[in-house]
Image (cartoon, rainbow over all chains, first blue to last red):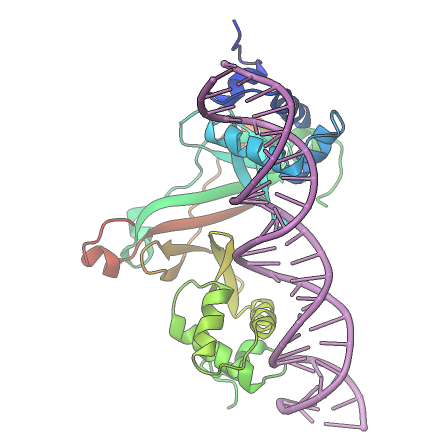
Length: 144
Length: 144
DNA sequence: GTGTATGCAAACTGTTTGCATGGAC
DNA sequence: GTCCATGCAAACAGTTTGCATACAC
C-alpha cells in the first residue's frame, strides 16, 4: 500500500511528489500545530537547505487544495495553516495561544432566526476559537 | 457643543483634527458599510485630491484606536473596516456579501463545556457572519 | 511656540509569478 | 517523452516609516 494515512505521497492527492514535497509534508507532521509558511520554510530548511520559499508556498497551496492542510486563522500578517483530517464535514478550529496546538471542534455558532440583525439571511460564517490547551494549562503559565 | 455624536471632531477622541481628518470621517459616514483603506482613500480623493495614502492609513489607525472604527473582517488581502458604535460591549458583525452593509449582532457562539475539545480553556473567539441583507434579498439577486 | 498631522517616497512584509532547468511519471 | 515541480529573482499588493514642512492647539 503506497498510500497509507501516513504516506506523505497521499497528501498531494493527484499531484506529483518530489523529494522536496516529501520533506515539506514530513516537516508539517513534526510541527504538530498551527504554523505560518515562514515557520514551515524554516523547519524545512533544517532538513534540506536548498528548498526555496516559492516551493514551500506552492506545496502548501497544493496541500490545501487536496484537503490535507487547512487555513486556521492568522497571526500578525501571515496566514496560519494546520494539518486537518476532518474531511468535508463542517467544523472549526481551536488554537492554543501558548503552544499553537490545533484541534477540531464542532461548530459553536447558533443563530436564532430572531437574532438575525435586521433580517439578514446568514450564508456563512468564519469562526476561530483561541484558548489554552490542557498541557499548557497544567504547566501553570498564565496567558502570554 | 462641539462633540455631538455627529461631530467629526469627536471621532478622534483626544487626537488633533485637521481638515483632512474631517474629510476622512465624512467619507466614512457616506460609505455606510464595510470598506478597505483603499476604498476610503478613493472616496476621500473625490473630495480632496491632495490627501495622501499614508494620511488615510494613519487616520484609520487613530479612528480604530478611539473606537470609532472597527476591523470587521477582510476581503482579498485587505482589512475591512466599518464604523461601529457598539461601544465596549461584546458583539460581532454581519457583513452583507452583496452590498457590504454591516450590522452589529449579538454573540452567536455557544460553547458547552463538554464541547471544549480535549479540555481547551477557551479565552477568546473571532467570529464574522456573512449573509445577504434584506434590501439585497428583496432585489432578488442570488449570491455572487 | 510646541508638538502633532501631512505628504511624498522609500522601505518592508507576505505572497505570487516568469522563466529556464531537472526530474516524476 | 511529456509535463509538472523547482529555484532563483523579480514583481506585487497592502501597509508602514523617515523626514522636512505645515498647521492645530
